[in-house]
Length: 225
Image 1 (cartoon, helix red, strand yellow):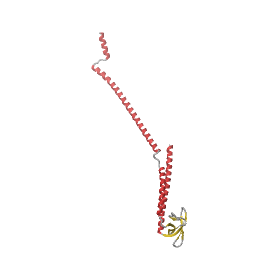
Image 2 (cartoon, one colour):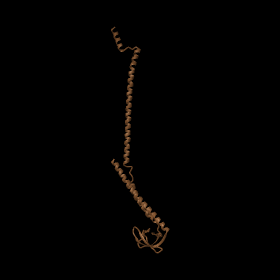
Image 3 (spheres, rainbow, N blue to C red):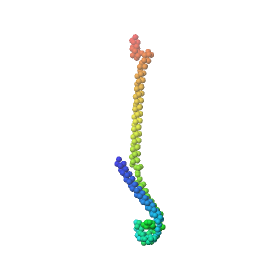
Image 4 (tube, helix red, strand yellow):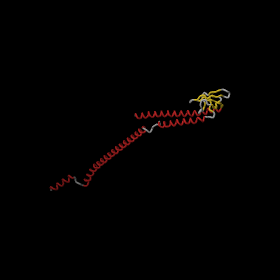
């Protein structure tokens, strides 16, 4: 009973860890897909109201790259959300950008599109599942272990018990039948003997055979004469 309880608890822990791994891998996959979809939507918005301008990189870090550019009307804009597809840019660099005329904060490096997001997003998904797959295999439910052995042993014991009971019952039945047949034969022989003696006596009397005692008595009389 203790072994079965420990096995069940271990199986529950494995299932919980398996769900966690699946959840993390699935979340990374969804985030990568959302990133790609969002990039294509931003490109579509820029293409719908595209305005080109000269810009300069004023700050660059791991989170975002900020650029400053001047619109056709002379107004100066600074992209608060950073520029899209900033790979390779350095602070102070001058470049051509394209932005959404209705939303100047939506700006991208001219000539770059959402296709550039496919490689990093796809690589992230592939690496994630390369790590998750071995973990999921290691955390798979072990159904062919102790439980199966216990069930097999129980089944074997049940079959042995059924076989032993059947053999014992068959042996008892055979012994009982043999005893009954023997008793019946003895009773039949006894009845035959009992029935045969009166018949033999009656036959002797009918044939005129004297009784042994009478024969002895007659022989005695003949000797005296």
